[in-house]
Length: 633
Image 1 (cartoon, rainbow, N blue to C red):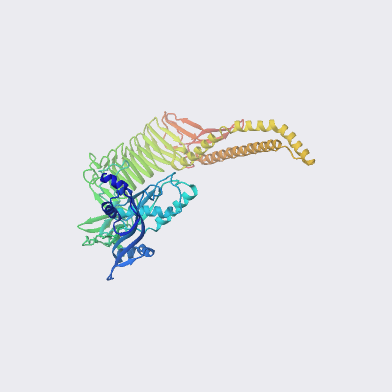
Image 2 (cartoon, one colour; image 1 turned 90 degrees about the horizontal axis):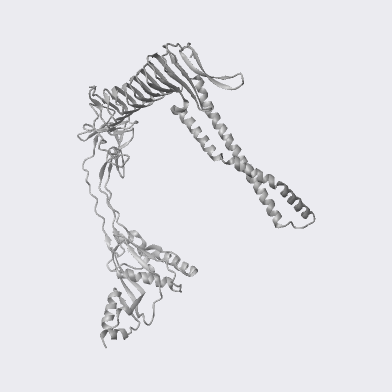
């Protein structure tokens, strides 16, 4: 008989052994008794824990009932010097005592071995038995012992979770899903933090554009701050704290390092606040951070010769930082603000030209040269010498508009040689040809010299009133889409109600008659009556909704009418004589209608308005009115 055959026929008698390594003990049993290892299993009968406590001469023996002493993180990390475990286990032959089937359990550990997670898999074959909890815990403990992890320690949540799984199995007779829980957890190391200087004002610079690409033009040349803004911060070093893993090994924290040897120097424009976490440097006033040889200051005005990709890159100090930026380049053959540059500040004074694809944003802007056709200017107040690009803001004064676009509240222009203007009120000294002008209030022309100018009075295209009108028009459109099918639905429901009115009245009378004779009406009668009542209710509810939505449309149209009533106060004033081929148009929203007037050569009509009149038939009509009384206008 071969050795293998002998091992197959040799059985292991149950035996209890105290050992620190049950799996190593199995190898001894195989060697000494000749039993194949695949037939040997064991149960944990008792956990013996020996702990060396700081300041104590001899190790303590901790009973299983007292293992919760290690639940205290401070004690576990700071007081414990070492933990050792041994186990009283019972080895048995699985051919004599077949193990009860348990669900599959997988274990996972984090990198630092401070947390062990178990997943008990969904299982329809596992059968509940009285000692299920105990057997499953024993099964998990054996997995932990195999990889040298302490058992019975810091595992309160595992006991609770296994009790829940056991309850589910007992009630449902199967494990309904995967259950993941913490088996045991150590204490993570709290990392130390070196001291550091954080330049918050520099972090405001965002060199990434809206497409998540690096904007090489935005290099943070000038960094604006508002009053009382945190600009620099010294963060004191913070010592970490040690941890301990689930094997009982200490995880030492690295010591924090002092790296900052000198605090930033600053002027009186920066003040400090110190607390236990560090020192914070704040700006006393709005401006930009200026640093020379380690001395930090807040300034509010800067002169630069030019803003170009090569010299400064884009400059963004923000609109609320009180920074005035003066760009001195005034050679009209060069660009003071270069191609593709973005400049933003409270006030910007550009003595020269603004190039293509440049954007200038400020509360107040002055441009002494000309703006390129592809330049964009945005400001509350602006003065521009020659404007060919696009402007949007509130008040703007322009010496010469040459095909540029202007969208503002109030516009004053000395000379218009083509272009597009949208504003509440516009004053033009000299209007030449080929311009499109949209107003809400007044257009005043001191001298008209050209033709083919299109003048439109349209409240829907002006910012404030336009938003109000367009908002109401959108609401009207939505409501109309909601009610478009309602009339046909109402007609159909009304027809059904009328068609069934006679038969329902007969049923009602029959029910009353049966009740008088103490007879119960048939269920079908009651059902028919309820169905009819529900139909009447649906019809009335739909009719109410339809009327409410129609009323809402009428109210919104009334609001539009109130807004556009101001059109009858709008006027186009021309202090000179008219030229032919100039068009003046007053646009109504509701009713949608244009009232147009085409000027005639050498016509004298100083003031042109639109009026609402009543015709002989009693209808409302709209007509152009002309007069020469500029003062009265």
